[in-house]
Image (tube, rainbow, N blue to C red; front, side):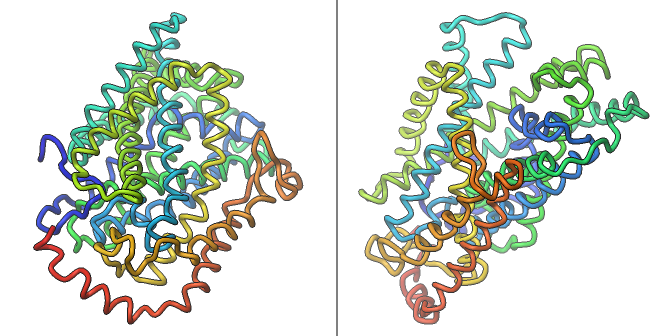
Amino acid sequence: MKLIESRSIDYVPLAERHGKGWHLWPIWFAGDAHLATLATGAIGIALGLGFGWSVIAILAGCALGTLFMASHSSQGPELGLPQMIQSRPQFGYRGALLVWLFALVTYIGYTVFNEVLFGVAVQDLTGVHLSQTALAVIFALFTLAALLFAVAGYDMIHKAQQVMALVTVLALLVFSVGVILIGHGMPQLGMGKWLVTPFLLQFFAAAGYQLSWSIYVSDYSRYLPRDIGVKSTFFWTFTGAFMGGAWTMLVGDIAIALFPGREIVGAVMATSDHIVPGFGAVLIVLSSLSLVTITTINLYGGSLTMLSIIDSFHHVANPGRLRLITLVVLGVICTWLSVIAGDNVQKLIENLLSVLIYLFTPWTAVNLVDFFFVRHGHYSVREIFNPDGIYGKWNWRGITAYFVGFVAMVPCFSTPVYIGPIAKMLGGADVSMLVGLPVAAVVYYIACRSLDLDAERAHIAVADAGLEAGA
């Protein structure tokens, strides 16, 4: 294992590939098991949905969102490239800037949200209202800890997530067994009331939350051997993300069912302390530590996306060194934003991130259709980095499909600033994902029927000749 990763957006040659398929399980299990996920699982029951129905909504929603998220995982071993740089064949050398800019804002927004949430957890655990200066110090230390793992890079992130996954599984097992023992016969944990709108809200909240991981996935599978196979990468990514997300959401669901009216951290602590005195603090500390490693993943992905943006205008000659510089820049920006983020700004960030999820739904459809049904995994690594290559600067097919899919979703939007007519008919439930995914997918597939794929593959064979020797 290298102390500091030397690569970034550049191709990982086969000689440097390493790891096993199961290594994807802990990175996505631990990636989903943290404080923000707890809150996602409490949406339906907080709106009056019965506990049993909210469980069904969480499990079904997580399954749907993770299905698409995990499908991106096999792109890493096949191409040996990070997730977002792979958008060039669909959108063009510069057309991909559209999704990269959205991705960069997402990485920064989630990092700021995690830092502020960590500060809230510290105050809840200590019972002390911290001054702005004290919070600034906590945010700086939080960012520094996340940066250390991000600087070390791919291998260290995998190792850290393996440790976090093991500890978190043990803690969740204690919680789950305890709930089974103390919760038997409790009416709060029965099926409860069926309500259509809260059920849909919980279902799509869980699905959208899992889908939002799509922009990260192959960043953490690109060093795996190419022959590891689609089934293996999909299985380990899906089971890790689904179990981590659904299990943690169910913890939040149970906590609010037993202690309605409390905020999520307090409810989880009260439920855990009811199982084993003092266990609440342990569970929240673990969930807070998971925020550090997930912030590492945000900073790591953000640096790769920033490098992709820079590379669109100026070839990055030394991407490994520049990765370290962009990490520091992102760390400073995120810490500064966290320090100045009051309650209103924090709410704005939450609203912004909910909108950004809409922006990645049509991208997911276009990217997956291109990989599995149009080009079937055949791409030229060299042409992806060639501004005058076969993928063009602006690819009308991907851009058109993206915007058509996005526009089709608008009537279904349900946000604090806009509620579409279909969402109003459904009582505020947001079903935009079910519209955007198929519309963008079908439009892109039809647009690609004019592609001469045989000629493209012949060009790829010539363009990538000697790729491994030159890597």
